Length: 281
Image (cartoon, rainbow, N blue to C red; front, side, top):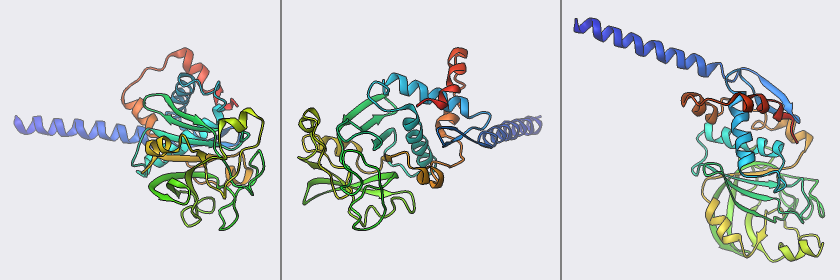
């Protein structure tokens, strides 16, 4: 009798384990290119949960009013989820976005807490002096280019250098930003990045490629995001969009798995609204 009971229990475990494996394997079979050229994981069990999560975060943090488009936020979240799925992030829940599609006079740096659904910092950030004037339009991964680099990076250790308290970055995308450490592209504070320039209509000062932020805010920002969080430099560059392995990655988003395993019921009204939102700007 005990043998039969043990065999029955083992069979149940194997059955449910196989069902879960099949479900997870079916979640990322195809790629959709409906998000303004950004590749999106769209397996039958994945896209609904992903868009529900993206839209709920975007709305609860009121990012549209802060000037961050939904499509940029989607791309940033995809990279964050990809790095999370690869166990690259030591500090989870934090996402920093430099939106270089915006003017330097705009508060185009966003530090977001995805767990608490809060904007922790929204401020000014410089780009490389050879990337452009008020707007950054050209990017590089080369030494002495004095240009900003595109793509996903991970924050690293801090140090005190020529620009005071600073934070190193490690690039995660070969050919786009894997040289940022050797190029000494770091986050630091600067007096040429401040609200007074923006209010006076003056172009922000530019760096040698570093994402320099106001001196009054640098310590708090760095202490928040240092040592293992996701950092994304965005610009709608056609080559980057097509060639980035992270932007075009086909994988199961960890958040989609969490929503599925938690059996969260997505309201029908939100479900109908989520999928078309993939085209939102």
